[in-house]
Amino acid sequence: MLTSTKEILAAAQLRKYAVAAFNVYNLETLQAAIRVAEKENHPVIIALGERYFDTVDVEGFAALTKALAEKASIPVALHLDHAYQKESIVRAIDCGFTSVMYDGSKFSLEENIQYTKEIVEIAHKAGVSVEAEIGSVARGDFSDEEEGEGTLTDPKSAKKFVDETGVDFLAASIGTVHGMYKGEPNIDLGLLEEIQHAVQIPLVLHGGSGTPDNIMTQAVAKGICKVNVNTEVSLAAVSYLKQAIEEGRQVHLSDMMSGMQKAMEPVMTKFIRLLKNQQ
Image 1 (cartoon, rainbow, N blue to C red):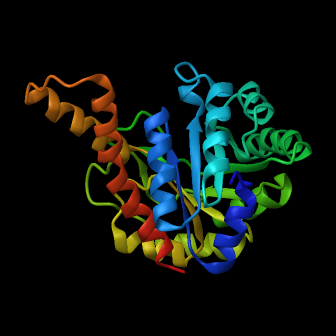
Image 2 (tube, rainbow, N blue to C red; image 1 turned 45 degrees about the vertical axis):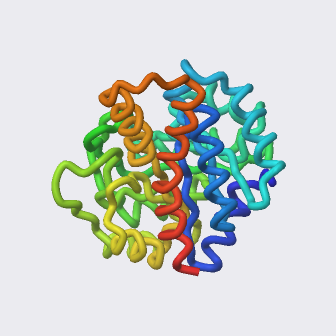
């Protein structure tokens, strides 16, 4: 069933578990995410980044997601990830996304507050929830996200931001990266705890890929309700494709796409099981 992201994360915050937000790009990634979530009997968030708007028909993708969500036995939300343009956010709202992320992290705190507040007003009028970011997540290996400065979230700034914008969930920068870590992860769980005490809304962890399991479970215990996952899933599919090519297999495209979907599902399963273990 298609469910509001806010409703899904409110339940996660209350019961102290987290929900995976899988970045998807096509039918196979979408099917994999929903199929795995159903098997694990756990909600799932389908995330489409603004950066994929040039290659994915947004209205068609939203219609497809809603159709599959209505058939699903678990709550499914549709989320716009890392949007920088108001036009993209309005487009996503108009075709039925249940939440949007406005990323104003490159701006000063006051500018970020100003721009985010405008987005919140637009989205809330349509019954759509808003995620925003304070601080900046750095870019690791194999990521297709924009380069971030890696600035950690200041708890006092987070409180001011949440109070003045009315956002529904906050992406906290605590040392994770978009993509895979280039060295040993340096994640500040103490800072996460401070942020959790400063704000009352659900917290979001960007950069789930490569984050050690023990760090992830501690982060959920300290207030993370949504974990974004992209690169590990992508690498699993690409590795399957690479192996098939190296082996010289003469495989029909339909079989190749099916195989890539099956390769992604164990990775997604790992994350869902890890996040729901906190229940």
